[in-house]
Figure 1 (tube, rainbow, N blue to C red):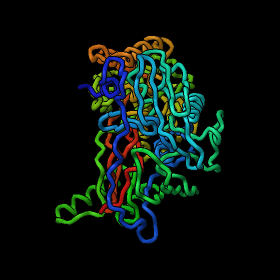
Figure 2 (cartoon, rainbow, N blue to C red):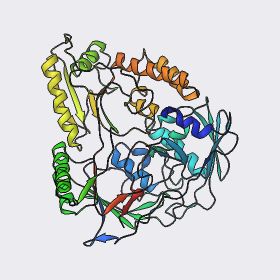
Figure 3 (tube, rainbow, N blue to C red):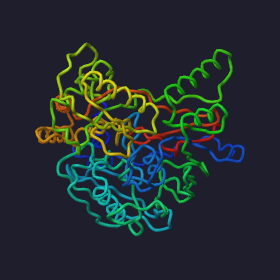
Length: 496
């Protein structure tokens, strides 16, 4: 079965219009032994260099902010990224009651961490608020026409067309449910105001070094935790590497440089050869990262088709990813040329571009320098490297997609189409969303990838493994990741 078809099957497998309940609450996650709640006087510790700057789910812009939102709030739906299975989270049950009507029923007695009751009105408010404040993060809900609340426990979504991806749109971090009485409908909640959610954790403290989460005793859902306290601390690669070696942290996520990863894996291999156990191990996340170069819509050079193609061609010899859809996702085709000795086109040598990158990701900094050098050497243009908060023409990205589905991965391209491609892409996306037939979906996915290569507004660079190391004292259990492979701490446990 094609993996990008599983969303449809998960929702509609009980009949043509799914008139009976097909999506139900799963059993709670397994738990490991609750070993000491702290080691040497400290809580379970997670290190990452990418700082979160907001606790408001509508403000999520990077993977660390997604991690915080996933842990503090609930969403109607839950996605297991490895299988793409879609299940309820906050909802008791979600089902299609007609081709274009998606109903979710809430359990009674739900409360936020503030003690306020959580009802269908909060859900409607949260989704509409996120659509206003974070439209790009909510693009998977593109088929939504309106939201109704027939009663306090029912949320009814009316759609423009049948959509096999709609449930996935309700699982993204930005679709988290907030307290209608506490959150402003038109602006993000300031960081000096406590977040109010219903997730497995609540915020205990926030400072310039990181944040501390504590278990929310009132949480009701499938992702409960027995961890009383987790500390997330900002740390650079050198600090994180030392913490793993010294066993002063339980999880290190993203932040390690390629050289640090090589050294740590060398230590693991050395320990194995000596028939002993290293103090840490690597959690395997094969090819879950797609590094891409994206033209930003505000760039005055973006409309220059010859320049876009020239930049794509300048990366061809070094490119290892052949599409903006990763190879592990069904529907992938080889749309971009790789290798060879392409003839470089002539471009205006007076062009000066600004290329920004995620400076909290050491691997991306190395890649940014490589990309800049290729453009300057092969095209003779000038490229200035800037950090992720600065204005730019181009951006190197390695963040997780909203969801690990074909359309989830394609959103960077589909959200900002060129004027000449917009109608074609909209029609192809609707065709994929509304059909249940692989013979319809696969050619449409292929056409989108071919058009992406022709437009070159989003250019793949490389597929890479996720970087996640754990102390031997720590484990991740159950569905330990968000819908797009974001780390979610509800799966963190002390080992028995």
